[in-house]
Length: 254
Image 1 (cartoon, rainbow, N blue to C red):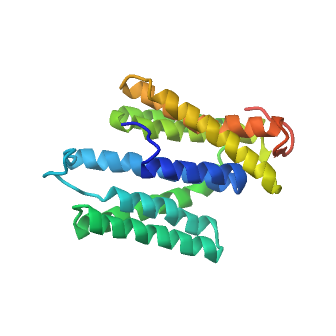
Image 2 (tube, rainbow, N blue to C red):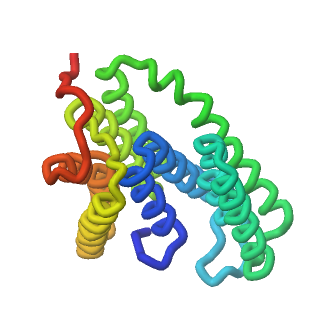
């Protein structure tokens, strides 16, 4: 359990963060939530069906993680962006994930099918929940962003990393909407500077996590820091540096 720069999970976190910082803040935040939920529930389901040993021999391979994650993450982009370019990119990434899973893993067709089905179900649930969540009063939304991930940690401690990412992303986005209200700039050079600063800070936080002992609560807090950096601290810093603009005035939780 941990973060490395060569994992698919890390790659998708980077994509969501760049989207949040430089293109579409709400879409990037929701993608982080989809990613965290998908991988968390994959781990929970694997635990229920006895996980595959590290050497890949024996055990259950249900469901296929690569397929589930690709369908959840890239599939959600189909709802967020109607542009044909995003449609083709999303379908292409899903097909690549399926192809790699078929060619280079021991997953059965049932594993792949169920991975895709679970990923699609997560997309549907998150997409259908957005209006309900968005209509919550801010104090309830902030409380929900703390209580729900903490409950997931208690339910499945091995999923601490992604429960923490969910908490940091949700709480950070909730506070950012009140205290920062960043509006993404249209200037390409400012987008690039924001991405460089954000990426550098993210790498430092990730690297610091390698020094932590293998304790679920520490993984949870470390991942929460990752989510907070992406959704709150970097937006606040970019506004202070004049890279992005602030929309409206500060609000308070009432």
